[in-house]
Length: 137
Image 1 (cartoon, helix red, strand yellow):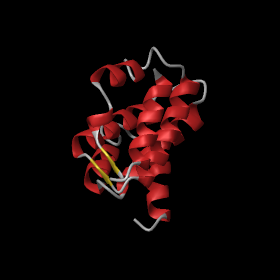
Image 2 (cartoon, rainbow, N blue to C red):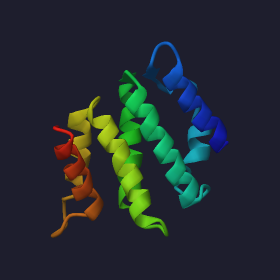
Image 3 (cartoon, helix red, strand yellow):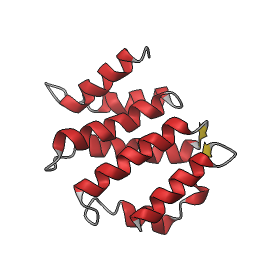
Image 4 (cartoon, rainbow, N blue to C red):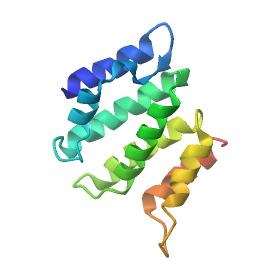
């Protein structure tokens, strides 16, 4: 199931249209890939996040509904604790950095939510803000 999602995402990015839309992803494939984070190991989710980042960077346009779902999932992954914590959170943060070029307001709003109710911000949020600053955002 994971391999088929990755191939669908890659073929969507390599297609002539160059846009990423929810058409290639069925509700079943989305559910199979991210069912509350229990069905896929952190190592596999890390790889999926890395591939998704590459697909987003190469896409000329992204469907707004799909982008909102990706932003939500990436921000959740960015704050999740796993055995691969830094790598895992950095890969999820890199998805948000890649989406910044398409949806800066939505990404910023989600990052700012991470500051609410906390005295000190999450390390992963600070890293993403630093990456955005370094790319001239």
